[in-house]
Image (cartoon, rainbow, N blue to C red):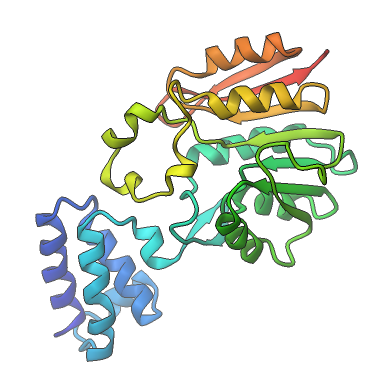
Length: 275
């Protein structure tokens, strides 16, 4: 079977199983299996695909057809221009989170107090901040030991980053004060979890489930962080930023701005503590 024949037959199979962007998905999986770029695939359409490559691809195609995210199958993704290792133990970073990163970065003083990344998951935000500010002191926390193991691999050698297992700010090992706390916490209401796209349902529930209204962890973080940071930057779900704004104001924060995501829905909240 040639490269082109494999692409065509596998694309038809993925299409039949309602996989989004089936041709692109197959090209990325084949390029990864062959250790080629997508462009090289186009230059090698007539080349035969060796049996060991086919054996590697067959289970991946079946898993993708069942809804398993491509990023987990490839074991990696890109965030803010940086490559990240991924496993099913961590949430897959979204473009919206790059907006969160950019807004946080615009307010950070590289020579100031530490920055805290709460619910770091894969370590995406911490990695991007460390690459942008090599001298910045960063602390990244997560309640999941498995997620921290992934973050540790991604952040190895990246900068001045300390990783801690912590339920939000509960750890006594955390510094007392920060210049910025940035967080992409679980914000999907519990009742909506089973209605999510099948790809999303493959992601860790711990990283998705935000309680009855989706704000359980956000509510706790706002309360815990008051007086411990100057700036607070949050990624939130649909319809949540206004409720989070009220929670922030009650805790002594003043709103700086609420920003939309790429679909023009309010998504990112940035606030400053005034006490």
